[in-house]
Image (cartoon, rainbow over all chains, first blue to last red; front, side, top):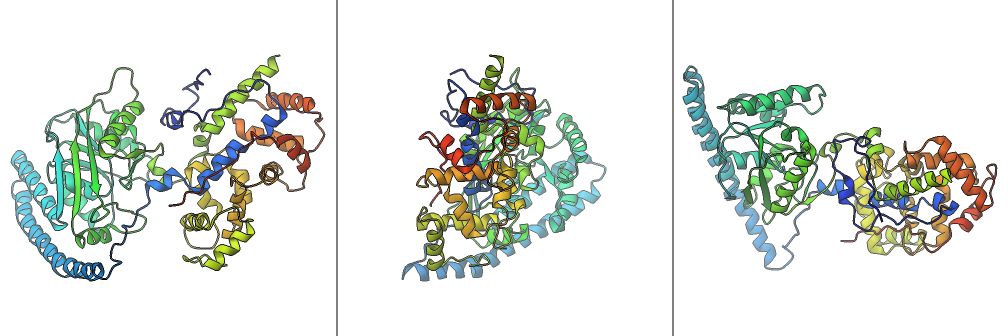
Length: 377
Length: 175
């Protein structure tokens, strides 16, 4: 059977080749003669549609799986109750205290440094970086974070970007406590937004607004400028564009991969043993999410700093992005799905529908080729 | 079980099971209910077209608009009855009837040449021109003994499509 190659100019080059995700035997054998039965038989397409109604890989990426209850026993239940008392009554106030102390120390150092050292930029930047790392360590301590870092620590060099998979906003804090990254984030409302515009601004963060279309070009320019600057903090990008439940990775956006810089992948995997760190932004606010973490036993995660990757000759940005995604997914044990994370916020456009190839329509295309052959007879 | 509550009683399950002719097991019906509630975001008791389209795999399907007409606004019982045609134990006539309904968009019991053309156009997208589709369809229909003006009834569909190769099966995940 000859492999069906679709002309790349017809398909939108912005998406990965979905044929790579199809099971190997799903493409049907061409028939020897086209009959009315074959033409009328739309069962493969209907089966796919019904399959999507019953279960689909996109929704699965954003499902938070509640932990299994284990307190169903005469001695386990009181133990669990004791656990609740310890967590809410002892640990939580202790953590709030640690966090408050941390904030006091941070602000009492940060504000003088920021205001008084206005002229001495280099020194100020170094101190501010150290202080941001400090407050992040306090945050991590406030959830009793047990983070294991593997691999060489990132260093600040020009022409490099760091990319990581995204589960929650705490990814940023976990990574920031080790190295002061400049991150590109969605501008949030509320107290998070306030933090973003004051403190994080000093580390060199870049803001974008998902809902503004024009925003993309401005952001692309800012990214490029940052990467090319010599004494900027290393740039951290979450190419998925949205929080995923740490069992899957969705498509990486190519923006980070066409800056002409070396891409250093970082893989983050949370151990769900005590708490599920996935921030389901549709279900809870960030404050609720933080409180949930602060009243759990611990946040356990592994961070792997992986080997820096460069674009191979002849590779497109999208292929590069997919290659890095598979490196991260394999390391963190995540399944890859071919969906764009932004579909969480908007419907697929009609243009999407034309260019997406599914198993049924590949089979259909084989039939179309037969039709054409029939016409020429 | 008019409006969707988050709990399903044994009575409800048996009622639904009876209506789909026992094609689904009770576990499968519970799974389908979980899925129904997942898609029906504001617990209205039915899934709106917009909510179906929020599943990208469904929205991408070339026949999604035709199927939407059949599934839009269904309550849970009808939802299960619709999906029962995709059960491996469903009879061939039941499956073919669903296919017939997809073609017969005006529900007059007859599938005309125009109806078939429209479905083929949806499926082939921009890969073939209307003229090409028409030519192929005329030729293939003549070979099967139908003219361009004949309209096909459900029995014709059963006669044409009933063969062991027709597989229209979806497995309901049960965890």
